[in-house]
Length: 404
Image 1: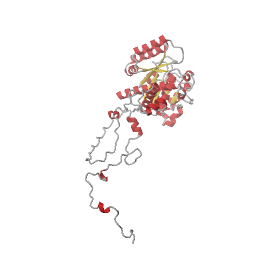
Image 2: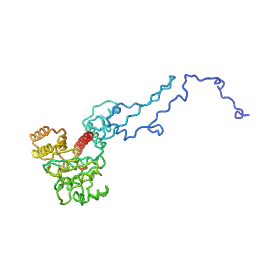
Image 3: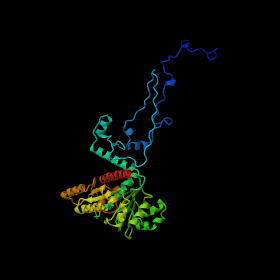
Image 4: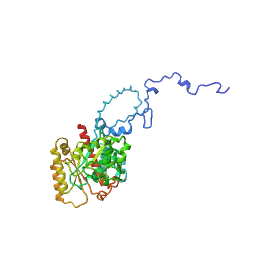
């Protein structure tokens, strides 16, 4: 009969009889489960990428701590130590997120990975960031601030200077275009000047109707699709509502009705004004303004208009005076010769007026053409400057709404 019919003990079985496992040896039950990896489904409880990204911009001390890597404990005879359960995190307060451009957080590492600097970094050597890398990091933080900031109501930005020709309309289009490009829409640029302005001329496309027709049909607007018939849609995803043809002078009541309706559909409203700060339309726009932006050329007449506006707002007091105290000045450049002494006087008077936030927008050939302005055709240096300006506006918005 073969071995299959008469089972025989395997070799060494006799030596194994009576063997008792040493108590000091860890059994299979003592081996901890494997650490969950990124591809695991059952044990992987990592936060979503969006939550991880938002956590980088929250002012939470826990975010500043370095991540703790989970490792498999070594198999030894020492008794297992029970790890206490982590205390549940306290609920975060609702409201405007504490997103600050001045924070040291970065949306992503924008350092060089190529060339000799990248080679040294890949070897683990610490290198001081180059000027280009610092600028790229600052722009990344600015874009993150613009995109991630949220508010519990629509916000209004007023671009104003009584002096004509200082760039109010192109600056309004650029700010609205920056908001819409980075946030994926949700921004409208609307004309609130008492008399017809050039907003519809400088915008891309040309809607058959505009501000006057929208005011006429305002009570019949029931949805975003209906409202879209009154706007000029830009390639930046911003919406523009200007004047088509002739119209009656806008009043404060007209501006109130416009803003109430537009705020139902757009979280960001940029208002392009005229040249008369004492008009009813301008005063109506002030009531729905959170941040005032004043464009100024390096010219005495443009500076005089800005100082006139600030004095007028201080005389009004209340909310208008607060807008003057927190205004953002944008020193624009249109390519015309600039006197160094005049530029110095402009800087001194802006400082003496108490303005804390001043930005520069360089000369741009596309803006100087005085044709339809397309945000995507602006020079890279211009879009970088507009991005920094818009981030400064958002920072001011966050500050104002936190106070409220």
